[in-house]
Length: 380
Ligand code: ADP
Ligand code: MG
Image 1 (tube, rainbow, N blue to C red):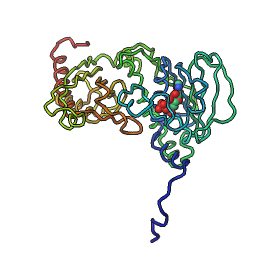
Image 2: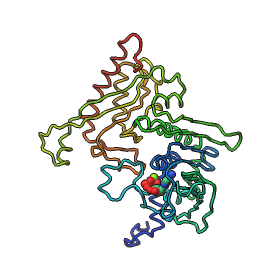
Image 3: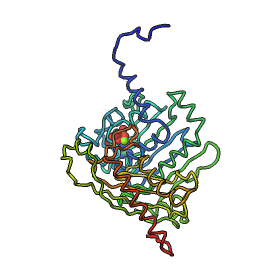
C-alpha cells in the first residue's frame, strides 16, 4: 500500500485553514442563524426579524435595529478573528457578549454562495451601506447605498453550496433543520426575559418556494418569560407552569479550589440562582418532551446535559411517564463557568458541577412538592 507519509510536514495555506476551521464554527442551519441573532443582541437590538426563504435553503436574513457598524469597521467585518467585543484572552473571564471570537461572519463567507450586509449607525441613518463579501471575507470593491434606519441586515444565500456533501444533507433534511433553527430561536426569544433585561421583539417567518409566507414566532417585546411562553406556544401553555425561583450555595470541589489557588478548607461557597418556569409534575410535556426544555447560563442558551438530566430525574420520581416543560436560567459569577469550550458555545463548563447538580435536585424537588400540596395551584 502507498505510504501515507510520502510528504514531509509543511504548513497548510491560509485559504485551506480558513475553509477547514469555518466548517466547525457553522455546522448547520441552526448555528448559522444563531450566530446572526447573537450579533444582533450584542448590538443592543430591541427588534429582530428573521426571514427564511424556502426553509433557509434559498436564503435567510436577520434584520435588527441595533447599533449598526461604523464605516471604519467595514473592512474587518468578515475577517477571521476580528471582533469588536474582546481585546485579550483575560477578558474572556468576564465576557458578557454572545460573540467574542470574530469567526461567525468570516466562516459564513466561506460556507455560503453569498453574504451581504446592509448597515447604518445613528450617524449614517437614513442612508445605509450595502457591503458584499468574497469567500475569503474581503470586501467586494463596489459598495452601494440604500435606505436604512439605524441597524444591520445580514443576508446569507445558498448556505453550504461550497461544500456539496453538507449541502445535500441540508436539502435532504430541510424541514428538520429548519425546525431545529426555530427551536433555538425560541430560546433566544426567552433569553432577555430570563435575564430580566429589556425585552426583544422577535419575529420569525418563512417564505416557502411554493405558497405564501407565514409567521412562525412573534413576541411583543415584553420582558417577561411568561409573556414569551404565551407568544410562542399560546396562553394555554402557561396554565400548568410555576415559577422556578431557586437560590442555593454550591460548595467548591477540591479540584476547583486547587485551580483557583484557594486553601482546601476554604468553604466560601458560590451562590447560584435559578430563574425560570417549570411544569407542575402532574402535567409534563409527553414521554419524549425534551423539546420544551431550555437552559441558560447567565442568559446564554446552552445544553448542560447533567443539569437537564437532574431536572428530568426529579420530575420522573413523581411522574413516571413524562418530562417537565422547563426554562431555567442559571445566574452565577462569570468566573465560575467557561463558555469557550466548543465552537458553537453550546457546551459550558461549570465549576463544581457535581455539587451544583446535587443542590439543584434538592431545591427543585422541594419547589415542585410545595406546589403540589396546595389545593389551588400556585401560579407564582
Ligand atoms: P464576533 O461576534 O465574535 O465579534 P462575528 O464574526 O459574529 O464575530 O462579527 C464580527 C463583527 O462584526 C462583530 O464584532 C461586530 O463588530 C460586527 N457585527 C456583526 N454583526 C453585527 C450586527 N448585527 N450589528 C452590529 N455589528 C455587527
Ligand atoms: Mg458573532
